[in-house]
Amino acid sequence: MTAPATPVLRGQAPVVAVVAVGGAIGACARYGAALVWPAQVGGFPWTTFWVNVVGCAVIGVFMVGVTEIWAVHPLVRPFFGTGVLGGFTTFSTYAVDIQKLVEHGRPGTGFAYLAATLLAALAAVTLAATATRRVLKGKKSL
Image (cartoon, rainbow, N blue to C red):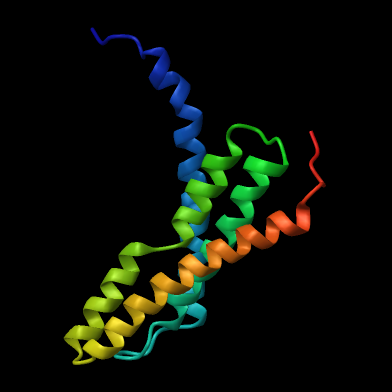
C-alpha cells in the first residue's frame, strides 16, 4: 500500500508542470536558433552567446515587471522565468562550446567567449532591468 500524496507534493504539481512546459518551449526556441544560425567548428559560438545575452535582457525586463510593476498569477514566474527563459538560455552549451574551442586549439577564443558571455549577460540583465524601471516608473497597475 502506498502512502497518499502529501499536500506539499500535490501543491507543487502545477509549478512543476508549468516549469516543464515552459522549459520545453524555451529549449525548442534555443534549438531553433542553433539550426538557423549554426556555429562554425572552431569559431566563436555567436548563437549561444546571443541567446544567453538576449535571455538575460528578457529576464531583467520580466523580473522588474512581475515583482515591481504588475500583479501576476503565481504560476507566471515559474512558467516564464524558470521554464521558458531557463530552457532558452544555456549554461551547459556555453560550457561545451568553451571545451570544444580549447580542443580545437582555440584556447584564446574560448577564454574570450567565457569572459564576453559573462560580462555581456550581466550587463544585459542590469541594463534591461534599469531601463524597464525608468520606462515603466509610475505605470503600476493592480
